Amino acid sequence: MISKRKNFSSFTLAEAYQHLNLSELKPWELGNATQAPSEFFRERLRRLQAHFDLRYCEKSKELLIDAFCEEAIAGLERLKIWKGVKLETDQTTGNADYLITERRDYVAAPFLCIVEAKKDDFEQGLAQCLVEMKACQVLNRDRAIVVFGIVTNGDGWRFYRLDPSGQGYETGLYSNRNIDELLGALHSLFSQCAQHLSESV
Figure 1 (cartoon, rainbow, N blue to C red):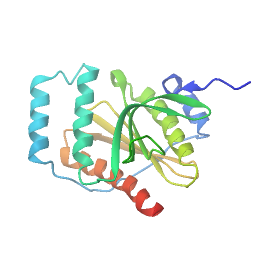
Figure 2 (cartoon, one colour):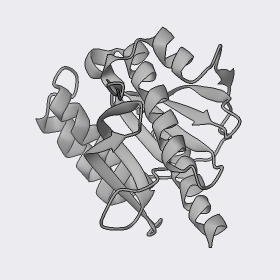
Figure 3 (cartoon, one colour):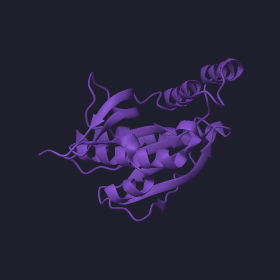
């Protein structure tokens, strides 16, 4: 009898670590890359902050995450952002908040997942992110690549890396109050995803 797939959001942090056979996440430094925001982004951010409740409303926080991702991925034409799409392996299933994949009309072999920390619960967000990263790794089974993850509530952003060896890494917390630094970190991760495409040619 086939065992029932477990939903990403139902994993506790301990279960997520066990699922990945991890005992700890090692520190990860992304470097000091920065990216100055465009005038378009500055104006969009100003309007969001002026007219939306970005503190308590989960749907409004999504707009903030959308805006930062849209700005940071600019210029990386071979990548595509998906929202709310199904992600599934033999063991796990669920709808990913965000996935970064090669630009095509269907989702295949994601390089990066982003999990919104609902109600600012970064611990539960991390549990979900780890399991989704593992799913991304499984779906890239034909090539051993590094996959990435992000947990964010729109204000704070934490970045993760899962190596082909199974070792996981974690950065410190980035803040959207330091826009240049956050955009630089996001663009750095997106660029590494794009690099996977260059390596596969």
